[in-house]
Amino acid sequence: MGVKTTISHSKYFGLPVVFGRLKKEVFALVVEKVWKKVKGWKEEFLSRAEKEKGSRWRIGNGENVLICKDRWIFENAGFRVTGRVHGLDEDSLVNSLIDKDLGQWKRDLIFSTFEAEEAKLIASKSPGPSRPPDLKLWKEIWKASVNQRIRNFLWRASKNVLPTKENLIKKGIRLDVGCNFCQSSSELVQHLFLDCKFAKHAFFSSILSFRLPHSVDFNDWLFSVLTCGDKFSVQLLCTLTYKVWLARNLQIYQHTVLNPIQVAEEALNCVCEFNAWYPDVGPEQRHRVSQEEYCPRNLNIMQVDAGVFTDGSAAYGCVVKDADGKVLLAACRKERFMCPLWWLKFKL
Image: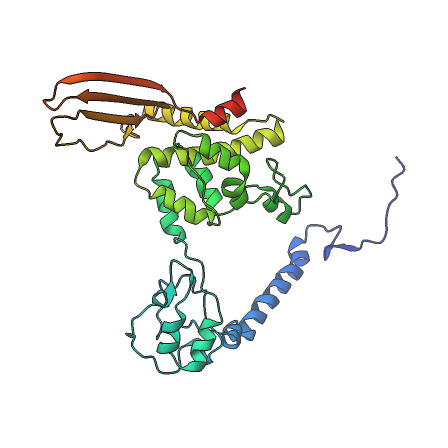
């Protein structure tokens, strides 16, 4: 076969290419190297790095960091407040120094509370973003009244472990990082579900006519959706997010392009099917107008009501009565709800 016999047996990855039954002696070298590393770590005292850099953590929104007792001023000696603190209790939290609406320090309060040097150190750093703790968000995800597959998807999206193009590039995969829907930005979780025009059109095409917010963190938005208190809205918005992801996958892997109205309709059908199997979830949503209690003799009363149902239909009606309560006119109608502009764009 033309195979030559070699006389010189060199090592491969630090181990001999050929060895007999004495495997213990061969692998003893590997064990010895591991033990040297372990002993070396023990002798060098890992806590030295802690001593040099300081024991600290990111304060984030400051909801769990004490002003006077915790280490949070990294440039200070011991990373604690060293000067006098005026007008605050010992158990005051760092978040009391942050304006939650603006996401900035309360500079007047800081300079009136701390010594001048410490106040400058605090004001020179930007406070962390205000976002719900992961455990609270995950708890809301896993108790949401949606399909288990959607819960798992939302959990992965909140942890930013979905195989978006940006995450795949971090894994060493070479591909075009642009969003397949709009090509205007990199495909991130934030862009795909909140900033992309396709997602905005899909959410607005739903029966909720939902407008996605601007400049909001995805986890913050998801937490606000899950805690809005309206089960049907939670179901539809979570399912819409999942359907946008499926539409993205169809376009990439099967070259099938869906329009936003199709995505919105599929999301609604999915919610209706889920509620058909679990009828205690997602009652019809009604917003009633308060009834007029008083009417002059020369005027009539018109009572109106409208509702949006989980099957994708909308109903509205009115009753006209005179001052004595006699019905003069009654009318009602039920139809599928859709924004007319979107119907003209995608249906014609």
